[in-house]
Length: 294
View 1: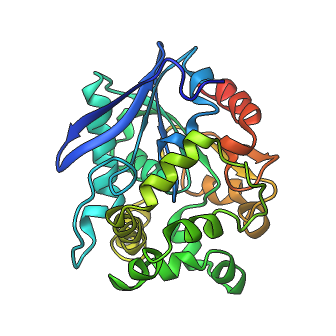
View 2: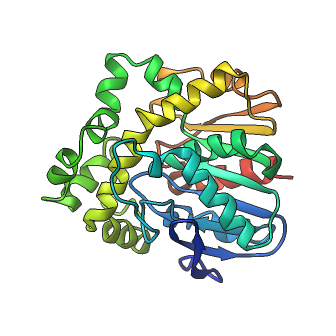
């Protein structure tokens, strides 16, 4: 299948800068949010099929890919998930969408979680792929988590330490980071890989990625604690998927955890993949998405 066939590559201005995105299709609006260290290109195997029923919008998060990349600040507020969520509300507002569905993976799913808390009337239904809430990761951290997700703690070190190491050999780092679960040389589609590598060769993107993780370990934790103490929960139906060959199902009971953070129906289960569900098992992801986003 051609790469993002019949999709348009564009930029949308939000407060602070431009968001690069692709959009295509007709029907109810569906926002797809990517993970790290990727770009919107991670959705290339599912977006065209989804566009047969939905108007699909696939942006790069701030700090990633071709989107704007704020400078480092002491409080990391420009990379708080609250700020990233506001970007996405503005992106969808550009297309005239007051409310919309969200499919999300990894870092994008953390943005989507915050968006569902801060803008509950905007989210019709939410799907999160291969995560539990950020605060749960930190509060449950043990040796397995520290070894498996060591990058959470490395990327969160003070600027510019992690950036300076990655920027020496960014492609070597990318291939090592994305191969923690064994993969063949041709795992990523050539066009998607080219987009990922172009992103990681940009020191500003590496800085933005690290700031994302610094925010997660500081200001985001504060926001998440405040929301939990206030009893704020996701109000819409929630689909939770994780890779059967990955770590989320090994370390946690994802559905049980998410049911404590959502007051509506929570459904889901494992997908026959590792961490990169939409690229490893696109047919399963599509089947789950079509059944859920009705």
